[in-house]
Amino acid sequence: MNLVETVVNENLRKNVPELSPGDRVRVHVRIVEGERERTQVFQGVVMRKRGGSLKENFTVRRIGAHGVGVERTFFLHSPRLEKIEVIAHAHVRRAQLYYLRGRTGKAARLREKRIDGKKVAVETDATETEE
Image (tube, rainbow, N blue to C red; front, side, top):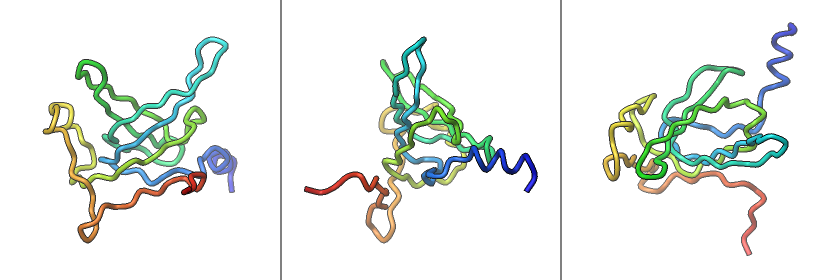
């Protein structure tokens, strides 16, 4: 293995969930403000995935205050990402969902992915226990 491959393998994230366009996700990002550090959660729909290896990134869109659409692009293997939670999967027929930019309200909804008439189960963390 050459030097480039070793550096890439050292920096790749190990616990990356399977993301695809149309998934509803919750992204926990570490924000640095001066001396302080905090975690900010950005929740929305995955619009696209791009790149590969260390350069892989994805764009998430959500509707912010007053109906304004907000899009953020995250590097999948960035050390600033604390975790990515997949909330739900949607059935889409496009790799990039740019058409959602022109839609609001009910027109912007995506059809839920189902297998044999049942919702697709989203994997949850093992830390949650039923009581």
